[in-house]
Image (cartoon, rainbow over all chains, first blue to last red; front, side, top):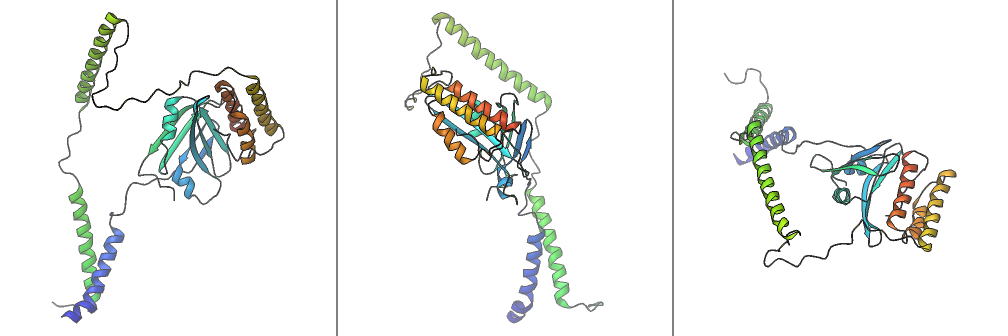
Length: 134
Length: 168
């Protein structure tokens, strides 16, 4: 009985378990990617997708800083896979707070005034749907 | 009855187990489905809740205006007992230092760096950024804003080729 169990039943059970794990949704979840896109008045994409992309060109980032003399300021910059780079700056405290919330799983989107280079909209989405930067 | 197709016992067992596993997976997914999820609020419920919140807010504002009318000043905010002493407010971003001869010279140098990069199609790289960093430390806020504007307008129009951004 024991010999039969080890010799025949265990491999079959292992096969069944393997098929179950491979076909079940236990490791699934809603996922999406966000390659970096640079338009004449906006840039967007996900940090993880850019970081994990096959090319070595694209990136998207936001940076913030403060000094006593010049106050708070922030940038967001995006470069797509073709090398087109766009970016904007802001001295607006609310937009700077949004920029500072970027993390490795963020999706960033920003729009700017072409005549001044100033950001007028910054969106940061922190979601399980976006791949983390590895 | 037996095994009319004469299939090996291993094959039959594998098919049976796989079928069972699918059924089990399906069952566990069904189990996870919340069958008694709270009923989503209807449009009427949401509107009523919003109205109630607005009424409360109007009440608070009216009360605050009435209080301030007596004193002519905003009510002092009393921290809750035991609360930590609030940190001193950060310097306001609205204030701007007056330009100095030093800041004017640095501003001219910074503007020239960007203009030269555009005119000569020089790639704005990390070295350029560090050169600019040496200039911007003494700039007033409005001067810095002008430098950033110059840089990003040139970048976004494709006139400036950059592998780096200006220093923050």
